[in-house]
Image (cartoon, rainbow, N blue to C red; front, side, top):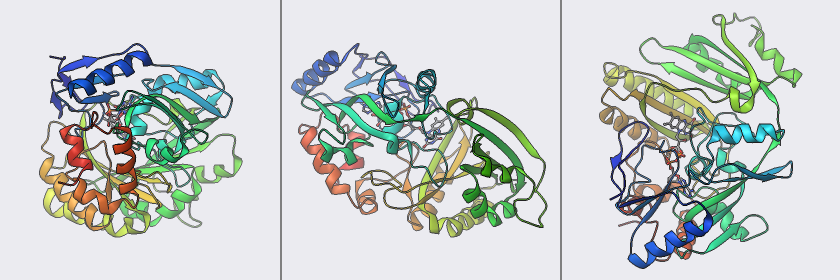
Length: 405
Ligand SMILES: Cc1cc2nc3c(=O)[nH]c(=O)nc-3n(C[C@H](O)[C@H](O)[C@H](O)COP(=O)(O)OP(=O)(O)OC[C@H]3O[C@@H](n4cnc5c(N)ncnc54)[C@H](O)[C@@H]3O)c2cc1C
């Protein structure tokens, strides 16, 4: 038996048949071949921050923790071992004078795990982290190594940039990077009505903007980030967001620093989360319905906050921002409180407005529900069957997600 696994939030625990931490790509290949011969499932795991059961297996749980660090860069592209944690990746890139274009709320995830589920930050001009992936090296279900990039096997790229660990074990990730730069982050509190009234302007005048809504008080915490070296952004720091209107409250926290130290936060309180990606044009009506339902049905059990972010459209087949500018709504709930009834009710609202679930967070969708949401769903499945003909990576949970019964 392998050692027991518990995810970050504590809601997913299991004991795999075996736990493996290969030291190099040869060991990864050998392990996949052995599993294939034995008819065993392999599930790659990153930092265990997903709460959907993507990594659950009674076969081999494979961690690339020993394959970590930046391998090389040419100033525009950087290649890292797949097990590199985002924090270490940020520091490694910074030392090389580089930075990623955007990041999510925390930096605990591995680069392979984060991009495998389309982890995202916020900003109208920024896709999710998978859009920064320009290439990967995969150990496929037959134990072969396949390099995927614009130059090699480019037909696989729209599937391999976000693959849920269903195409193989990613051992290396190549990313589009920028010369490093500094961001200034500010946050302040406002009423939710003010925030919604000014949302479009806040989104358009800031590089990155998101807000937390606290259902019990109807207050929001607005967070904006801009490059310190881009002067035009300065206008949004002044209390004149809209001419003639008062600034809603005093600006709160101000923080300046390089991207990887400014965007992610430290999270100590554990929480469960459901997040759906909505077509941007559906956000206003969807949020109004979320507000109404929380007030009517869930106010007593809702212990925390609701997060709203934006993501640019992309062309990655299983990306939940595929083909459409996206606004996301995430409901967070302290792990000490019940979440399922609340989240399921929110899921019904999100689905009504055409939402697609975050792959790594709580949701109750199966392949039958998901297929109509993704125009290139069948293309992804064809690539998956080609690279993993015997279903080495297809655990029961993944089969439910990817194969219609
Ligand atoms: C506190 C917290 C904050 C978060 N903040 C955000 C946020 O701001 N934005 C957002 O979008 N999401 C966020 N998430 C969700 C999180 O980013 C995703 O669930 C992410 O996939 C977790 O990465 P991980 O390294 O922990 O991977 P895991 O959860 O361990 O695995 C996720 C997926 O990656 C696959 N995988 C891992 N390694 C490999 C590999 N080497 N090869 C192939 N497949 C692999 C796994 O098989 C699985 O399918 C947050 C989660 C938590 C708990």
